[in-house]
Amino acid sequence: MNSRSLQTTIIFLIMGGILALALGGYLGSASRQFSDVLIEIQTWVSTRFLGFQDFVTAPRDIVSLRQRNAELETQVSQLQAQLIEMQQRVNETEILAALVDFSRSNPESTYKAATVIGRDPSPFLHYIIINRGSNDEILRGMPVVTNQGLVGRIDAVIADAARVQLITDPASAVNVFLQKADTSAILFGSVTGDISLDMISQNATVEPGDLILTSGLGGGFPSDLIIGQVVTVRTLEFELFQQATIQPAVDFTRLQIVLVITNFRPVDISPLVPSTSP
Amino acid sequence: MRNLIAFPLIGLAVILQSSVISEVRLLSGYADLLLLILAAWALQKRVESSWHWAVVACLAVGFVSSMPWFVLVVGYFVVVFMARALQKRVWQAPLLAMFSVVFLGTLFMHALSFVVLQILGTPFSIDEVIGLVTLPGLLLNMLFSIHIYAFMRDLARWVYPFEEHE
Image (cartoon, rainbow over the protein chains, first blue to last red):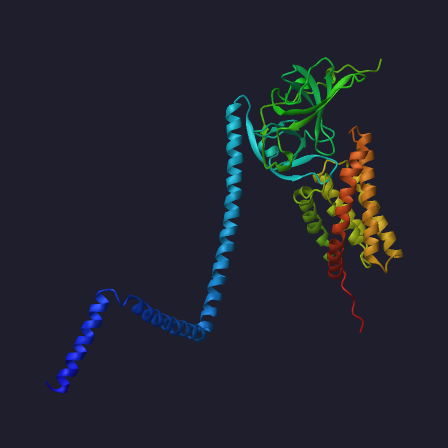
């Protein structure tokens, strides 16, 4: 056997031995350490390469990213504007749906919907301005409601707009009926926008939570329109009448769309009121 | 001719007052944009049309508001009168004059509204009016007065440009 074939045989034997050790699982820790070193080296090289690549290509990317960012910001602002518009439409639709439900559940009256477009410039007065007027057959004295309850009555009319005196106005007085106590009273507004009841008989038993409806007395409003609920009652023995504070059913700070009851004509009873002069 | 800006400006102010300012409430009070505009305009040195602006403001607000017209006429004319009188005396400190006119004008306007509405049969509680309407309204008027004054000063420069002497 010459030296060359001896070398080959030794190499094969070593290779066979390593293979046998590997197959027998004796080289696991050694091969793991070897592969860990390889992976670390590869990670190091790869990281440096990517860093270098970023450094070389970054300026071009920043420009394109800025452009893309500006485009997206424009798109976002457009979508936000659309979203606000859609939300407004949804709100309006919800209000109109509620008003339609209300008009269906009260078919004895005919209604005309109107949008609130302003308020009285003076803080002493509680009036709103609506976008319906005499062109829409709106007349002075017509009651104004929402699906929640009574809002007020038409105070002045021009061709395409009308001014509505709210029941919260300090000069407003509405004849009402307390359903549970079965008694009448008068509802007054105030400069702060709160409403209160006065002229409640001392004999009546009024409790918080009692429902207040229009009585129809005086001819200014139709009967049975909801106004609100009693919150507190003040009864003093030495006074002629009881008073009560009211939680209105309508949120007067968020009036957007209202209904004018167009088939109601207020009755002027002033000629029937006896004069006090002899 | 540039004085005709009064019509669109006061018209816009009435719309803003009715639709925006009246929704920006502090308790139950809010600012009076027309009063601020009239006061700031009348305090400008070379302005000669402040009384005309007051007439336009009275007409515009009277058309929208249910406040008796003579309250607006007396109130706004007194504000312009105060502003013209102060402008001649406190001309070195225009902002001080603006604050003074707004302070006194707001108090006068509210007092006049209160008295007239009481006489006409509207019941008011003076405590509520002072605490919840007048004082918050006064505070808002004072807050807005600086901005309105600056705007009206620029407008006055545009309406009455400086004459060039060569």
